[in-house]
Length: 330
Image (cartoon, rainbow, N blue to C red; front, top):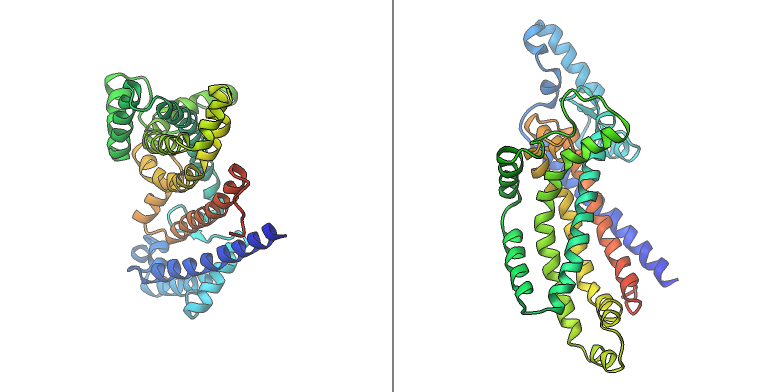
C-alpha cells in the first residue's frame, strides 16, 4: 500500500514538473527571433506575387493556429503532443511523427550498446581495483580512468577518427551504413555494427572512467565494514564475501550516479552523433536548431525531459531492489 501511494505521488510530481517545463520551453520558443511561417514557406516569398504570398501567409498562420492567443496556442500544442501529433517540420516538409522513428531507433541503439559496454567493463574493473587497492594494477587503472573521465568527448572522438579511421583505416568515419549498400538481414546488421564501433567506443570512455571510480570507492567503503570482517572470520569464500555481501551493499551510491549518467548519456550523444554524422536524435536536434525547425526541437527537448523525470522514479525503485532496507515512503 505504501509503495503504491509513493509511486502515485511520484507520478503526480512528474506530471506537474512536465507541464512546468513545457510552459517554459514553449515560452522560450515563442521568444526566439524569426517568423516560423516565413521559414516554412521558404522561397515562396520571392517566387510569388506579394498579394498571393500574403494570402498564402495568412492561410498558413490560420492553419497553424498562430493567430490565436498564446495560452490557446500552448494548450493546442500540448494537446496535440499528448495525442502523438508533434507538429509539422519546416525542414523536412513532413509531420514530425513521420521523421522521428528512425532517428530515435538509431539513438536508442547507440546508447543501449554504450551502456552494455560500460557496465561490462566498469563494474568488474571497479570491484577488482577495490580488492587490489593501492596495487600496481589499481594505480594504472586510476590514472587511465581519470584521464578518460577528464578529456571532453569530442576530443576523444577526433582522436579515435584520426587513429582508427585515418591512420589505421579499420572503421568508417561516419554514417550508419556503407554508401550504396542495400543489404538486409545479418549483412545489414553487421554493417551497422561496424559503423557503430567508433561512436560507442568514444561514448564509453567517460562512462567507464566515472563509474569505475564510483564502484571502486563504494566497494572500498563497504569492505571496511565490520560485517565484512565477520563474514571473513566465519570462513566464507572470498568471492562470496565480495560479490554477495559487499557488492550489493555498495550498489546504493552506484545506482545514483549510474542513473544520472544514463540520463546524461542520451543528452551527451548529441555531440557524438554530430561528429560521426550518426542519423539519430542528437544530429536531428542540431540540424533543426540550425534550420530553426522548432517543432522538431520542442519534440526532442520534451523527450529528454520525460527521460530525465522517468529516470528519477526508476532510481528510487532501483534502491529498493538493491537494498530491501530502503523504503520507498522514505
